[in-house]
Image (cartoon, rainbow, N blue to C red; front, side, top):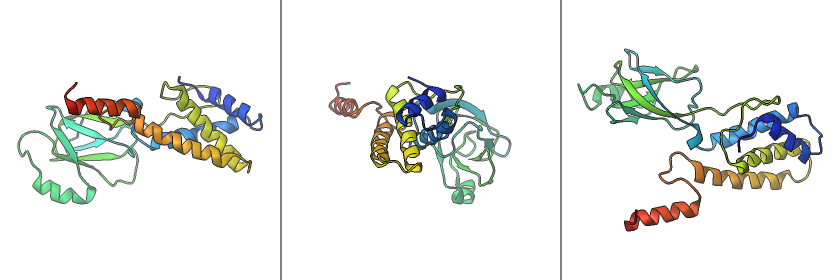
Length: 219
């Protein structure tokens, strides 16, 4: 289940024989948590929201959104707004579809060089839309505070494994290579099971069964 930084740091401290304080351990925990979050777009981070572009068709991305992960936009009537590369912006603005329908056709990130990022919609208009984005990873604290975003205990263990691995690597202790390999193997399973971009979520065997039933018309 979800755990805070103090609880996880205490576990790591036990594993390494109390050689570091909880305050010294927490940065390693946050590095592990960030790596896990950056590896995929997960269901527990997904946010469903609505927004409205300004008169230039622009929308400031919330500061809590991770711009490195999946964004999905639809018009209020349910019509998908397709993503395009920034280099196609001029071509899009001259050739967008759905002219005069009061909907957005495409979107792309503006290259502003500042945060929060800005998204440009085409055609440029003050229209409302629906959006699904993924939140940034929480920052764990030595005093307690925020907790990990999932409910599965083994995911907390994965963060602990990474912190232990990195501490042992930095201190030049033996055993960190094996821990690192185990971390990477588990991380692959996390992405497979919990990615919000999958049609069927869950363990591989359940997904295979669901796909088989769908293909044979048993659902």
